[in-house]
Image (cartoon, rainbow, N blue to C red; front, side, top):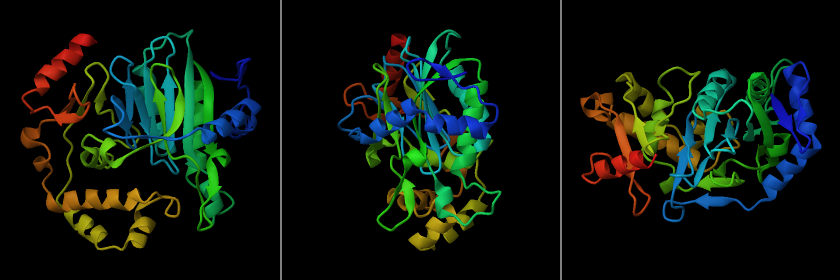
Length: 338
């Protein structure tokens, strides 16, 4: 059940389009979106934010205030970052949903990690999915990439057996501005939630803060069921574990072809929103392609077919491979604290 505003109005419309239109026009949510966009954005850096978790595309992570100060995601253009927080426990789950087909199962995964009481009013934040239909030559029956995702989100949220108060809805027209080149693009690409207070702010993650193991995690998006979100972060132990997945040696040829493309060609072939991507998009794609090209055998990434595990250094907050001699102590301490 979707709730909005101080009076906790319920969403009673029948079809998804009417539901979404009602939410986009609701004065409380319009004001909240404007205030959200006007808030100073924070840049989360490895050296400046002691305890954080960065969620990549097609991932979700659920964090507790005992271990994590901020959990967030960025680089969303036609994707939507969804945050759900239980105000009683402070448990906060963030998912980076990239198409309508992963919404139902993705939301179920996120909520199952929160263990919410049916009477608890959960806090919901959504940002991303600029209106890309403005920039596309579409047939009358086409909507681009963002609209189908947002319609499915509203439909599935309303169908859930929980009380869900939408506090931030910065999507579609509320998240669309015009770039210097004259193209529509997102006003906000990411956000972070402070687990203890529930504060939600626009945010970006610096290059050294998007890990750990961001290349392998990004590659895992290409493997496995498209309907499920990956969950490399473990809430109870405050660790990351990337399970083994396979790629064929034929990926090396595809990577070589991709590496030979110009930046403009790469954007056109690998992005759903080539005019709206951040400068880091091409760099990230080339890093993934270079890794596949140099390591065509997937077992190079997973020796003995074992998961890649990372634990947080208690002194610096930096992630380190679990093979480090100190990591067993760190992981066992985190588990005991839970």
